[in-house]
Length: 229
Image (cartoon, rainbow, N blue to C red; front, side, top):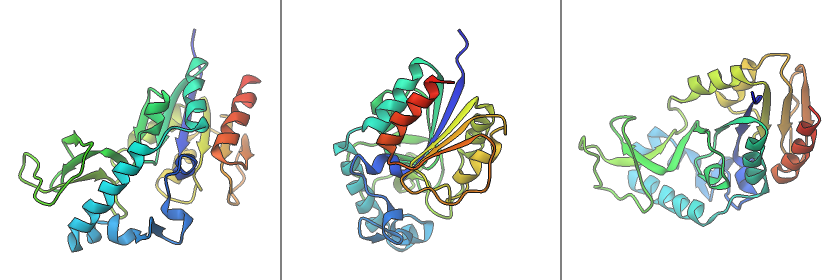
């Protein structure tokens, strides 16, 4: 049986309900840190030890967190659809909830790489310290896309969006590019759903349903709507 291709773009709002803080909640601060100090190439050059400490703490936070009803609800859609998740989040909550096709736009907290090159990346579950070197001799850093860096996965994500029979956005403001531009690749005829507790004024778009609720409630409502398609 041919399953419809359902492509989901998720952002910080879905993980916030699992207790993971987001920088957009507090004027550019993330857990009390200025994001330019801990999530930019300039911050890394200024104080790499601070950046490593910050992400070591984030790694522990993610390890303690659990998938919530929104993550689990999206994973359950694989029973009826060919689901691909494109996430802006660096956590692994989609995978732990059971989603089998997850593309991470902004990298993964449990991966690290040399500061000298994008590839290869290596799994990391513990802390990264100053002096920890990759095989090429470069200092190891989180395999995270920082502000001002290229987003290597945006092209495969755009290809996925263009293939969608149904497109869903969960827990993202649709204001941060290039991720926000992915909806532009979706055909006008394709049903689109946006779930967020605070949906900005979006330009008029064909076949768009806005569900202004937290991710856990919105995904439950979405599943009911999809049953009627």
